Length: 373
Image 1 (cartoon, one colour):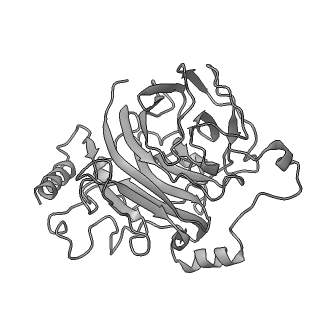
Image 2 (tube, one colour; image 1 turned 60 degrees about the vertical axis):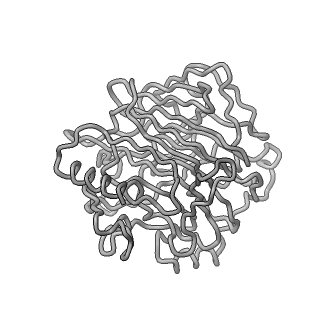
Image 3 (cartoon, helix red, strand yellow; image 1 turned 180 degrees about the horizontal axis):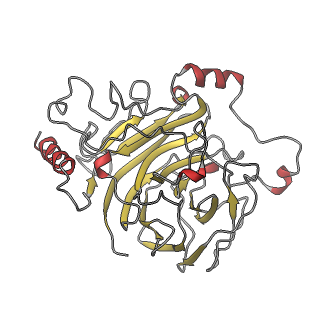
């Protein structure tokens, strides 16, 4: 109860405009219930596939967060911000009487993030085969996605996001750190099925990217931790040009990480050029051993120092398990509206094309703190 009271005071403080410093996050997942002061679960299926908090067998008295995708997740999950507001605790929760969520933006309609092209490709001989890559989005899956009454797409989305007051300005350098693992066995590792485990977006972006009133395009995350074919990899976006900047070993793609411009970049914009090669205004400096460790059945610790933008001194720095992986500088993300600032929207969990398989993502802890440039 004391933690909820402290959170309520923080909410009120931020709402009244008195808080000018970023509120740090230190989430250790010690409770068997969701901390609503930190998290909004509006894109988690809390009825059929709720987030769990099992005990950590490696640390007595500690727990972890477990985010599961399964067949019931098809169709995605919209964020419902009106009555009932899915960012508020359910009726009857002991947190409800003290809970307040200031800063919630009801005016901006959210659109699903486009997956875009995959960098984890099938072997060259398979690419020459007449057989297309396997997709589980058949007519029945499409029908079930529509019946679900959520995003209506043949996707699975189980993502946690921060309460709005914990968002920060895109130009403010911030350190995100978390420890996670994925299942040891992944059912499909051959068809480049697109899969995101963490993503950083910023909003608002300039209206020129999608000028029509009925535009159905949504911007890609400027930074994303991906898992296509069970291969952990990281992408960074310069507007519509997406580059792979780090990866765990991929048996079908032998990559060399060279300082300078990123070597693999693909177009993701809302036009017929999607998937074509592009050149990003990015520079990369790699560490001595920049190959990521795989999280397949193993815990890995990721640290991202993030400051996006198209002017000033934007950068993204990646560390894994205490090892420096890479640092990106240049133009990161999209142009923001004139005379407006943009906030970072961070989400962690599982967002992927539909697969009829159950996979669990475990998160041991997560912290967010201001960082030096």
